[in-house]
Image (cartoon, rainbow, N blue to C red; front, side, top):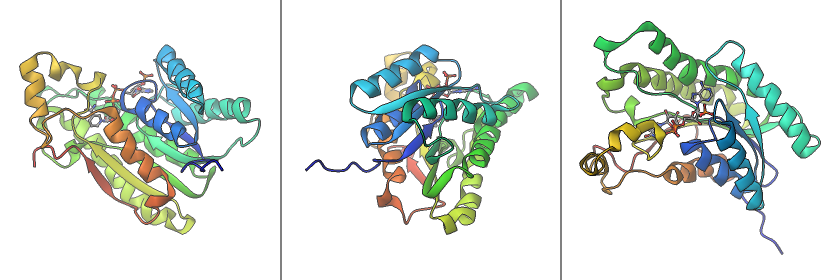
Amino acid sequence: MATQRALTGKIALVTGAGRGIGRAIAGRLAHDGALVGVHYGHSADAAQEVVAEIRKNGGRAFPVEAELGVPGDADAVFAAFDAGLRAESGGFEGVLDILVNNAGVSGSGPVGQAVPEVFDRMIAVNAKAPFFLVQGALPRMRDGGRIINISSLATRRAFPESVAYAMSKGALDTMTLCLAKELGGRGITVNTVGPGFIETDMNARRRKTPEARAALAARSVFDRIGRPSDVADVVAFLACDDSRWITGQYLDVSGGTDL
Ligand code: NAP
């Protein structure tokens, strides 16, 4: 008899899933049996590749295109999500079990160099978009659902070199706490995952020389830079029933960075 996988029958939406951490999360949730909406903003080819890879591995996924951080972004995401879901599942329109708010932008700089446009963008993409995505998700989310917000170690360690980024992620942490309380009655858990340095495009500028790489790796007690799968595996745990008694939490996924 085939063993049922942890997320069989679940429907997931992962934002920013064409690249980096989101890509690994989408792949892992699909591997665990979920039907996954692979959201992207600009990386259409990359997102198609993720969908193709998931399907090749026997999983189910579809692309969801919508730019975040612009007016109407959440509505656009769910319009694309519903269209994809209809085509992929032939039903289940308007249903969701797992929302992973992963898409994000970084690089805001220290306070002395801050400009209002960049500040606004950090808040719009990293905090406002997840907030309204949750608002759009809630009427569709089945009881026992999961909301997982990808924050950053930058909310737990001083990170003055990117203060607006850290502030935007701090808003996400606070949203997690509030929503966990509000949604407990429906069995929906809400948690934050806080990665340290993970090897993606986002921090490529920090790994330009072997010395810079080594210095970044040395900040973890494991003396290596994190991999997207290090984060995806934790998200998979939070997405499945095994984590049902965990809510409102910030999970440090930084490999013991700067302990
Ligand atoms: P990444 O490789 O730069 O990928 C960022 C993702 O976000 C892309 O898939 C991108 O999609 C999406 N995105 C960004 N702006 C968007 C917009 N305006 N509209 C739609 N999608 C948008 O970054 P990553 O490292 O995988 O980061 C994923 C999450 O982890 C982010 O929230 C980040 O803050 C957090 N994080 C990362 C690290 C790290 O060291 N890498 C550490 C702590 C936290 P498109 O390319 O399709 O636009």
